[in-house]
Structures are given as structure tokens and as C-alpha cells.
Amino acid sequence: MLILDDADTRNALPFAGLIAALRAMFISGCEAPPRHHHDVRVPGEPDGTLLLMPAWLPGRYMGLKQVSVFPGNASRGLPSIFGSYLLSSAVTGELLAIIDGGELTARRTAAASALAASHLARKDASVMLMAGTGRLSSNMIEAHMAVLPLKKVFVWGRDIAKAGPTLKRAEALGLEAIATDNLETAAREADIISCATLSTAPLIRGEWLKPGAHLDLVGAFKPDMRESDDQCVLRATCFVDTRAGALSEGGDIVQPIRAGLITAGHIVADLAELARKDHPGRASADEITLFKSVGASLEDLAGAIFAFEQTNRGASDEL
Figure 1 (cartoon, rainbow, N blue to C red):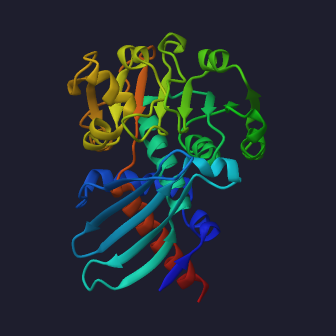
Figure 2: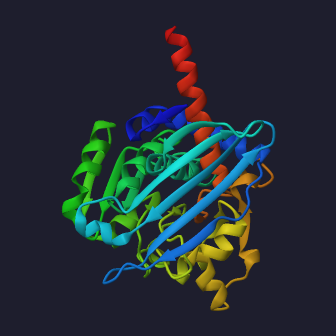
Figure 3: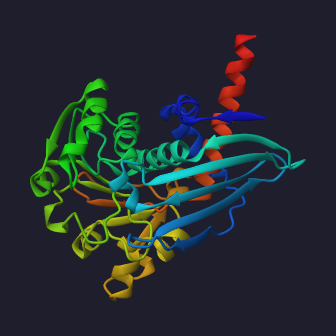
């Protein structure tokens, strides 16, 4: 049985290959029941969340991810997200691999956003705003670099002192990296705005989005969480990773629907439809696009299979 820790998992998931693996899985599809979603009370702190996400490809692989999201970990100097992925044979049920769930989640989330951006962002997008300084931030920047000609990135966080590692990683990738405490100014300049926070109130205002901007929202994964205001949704052409997830869990979509501002029909396509080219994606240079992601077990399965096969192929090559 293969065991991949966080470093092993990161090395087994290069973004170019991972984005391609996600594209292929969104095109082909897999069996993916609704995920289990449980609130976990933490006395004196915000609730934690336990997520259980199964998926399988008949006759090939099946997997289960367990993820915990505990916002209070920020005060402990710990990541907010922990998890493990169990990959098994879908023929025998044999456990094939245990993969670090936190690293798998971070990289497949970033890869899904980059896959969306390859269809929705302007092809000449060169300036990115990264809202959030957690584990996802560096991954988001690197993943988008795999599909777009980024040159400059602004990094914003509630505690800008925590932006250091993200800025260093961006600089190591060859980007001009700038820490900012002025979200509006950076947003107005950005071609791509990516938000990866645990915010429960809007961060990005629709009036800040310039013509041609692409807004990527990945942090608010529950109905009571939100990273964009109503004007963002009203101004933008809206896309999601999966309709089932976005319409039940994504606060950036759920809240405007509940308020009667939009309907489910406001979502013009999901990531599978983009990958299959059932929808052309961006329609014009000035169009404002929005991609809302809450995560899908399909993405985890694709990433886990890719990591497993990459590692086994690498081991075979060394023999």
C-alpha cells in the first residue's frame, strides 16, 4: 500500500498534469454521491466542519476523503484544513493508497479554478489579486500561472503579516509580488481576483470589477459564508464547478437566490460543460465572469488517481 505525506502528495501533483487530469475527469464523469456535511461544535470557538466525500470509477478506482475545517486553528498557528484520502480498487475493494488530504484538497481546488480560468479569464490576463494568505493562496497563484501569462500578484489578508510565505513563493515563481492592505485598489487593477478565505461577509464589491475581470471564489463553502456581494453576481456571467454543490452550499450563489435577486438559471454552465465545450466560456474581452467552487469528490478522485499513477510510474522508471 502506498502512503503519501504532504510533501509526497505535492510532488505527485504538478499543476499542468493535474489540470489535465481534472479536465479529463470532468469530461468523462464518475459516480459521485452527495457529500456528507456535518457541523462540529467547538466550545468557545466557531464550529468546525467534517466533510466525507466518496466517489468511484466502476471497474477502476474508488475513493473517500475525510476533511476537517476548523477556523479556530488560526489562533493556534495550525492549518484550518486537515484530511486524508483513501484510494481503493473498485474491483476488489483493496486499499491502494493513503494520500494527504489537505495537500490533495489544496492542489485540486487550485487546479479546478485554473481549469475554469483557462475558459473564463482573458487570455492576456497578467495581474492577479489573491485574497487570503492560507494554504490555498500559493497553490492558487501557481495553478493560474500554469494556464495564464501572469506577471504581477497582489496578496491581501486580514492580517497582512501572514502574507510572507505566499509572497516569497510568488517571487520564486518569477512574479512581482506585492502585499496590500487596500483590497479595493488591488481589485480594480486585477484581471483575476481569487478569494480563498473563510469569510462570512462580502469582501469583493461588484463595483470594483473592471471590464474583462474574472472573479474566482473558492473559500465560502457553506450557505452562511460569502466572499462577494450581490453586485458581483448581478454584473457577472456566472459559472460553477457543480450546480448541485453551488446551489446547496455556496453562499455566494445561495444567498442572492434566497433574496430573490437571481434564480438557478443565472448559472450558465458548470465545469463539466466548459471542459466538454458545451459552453464556449468567455464571450468577449469586456465580459465579467465569475466562477464559484465549493469542491467536488470528482476532483479529489481525479487528483488521487493521478498522484497514485504518477508515483507508481516514477517508481517503475527507477527500476
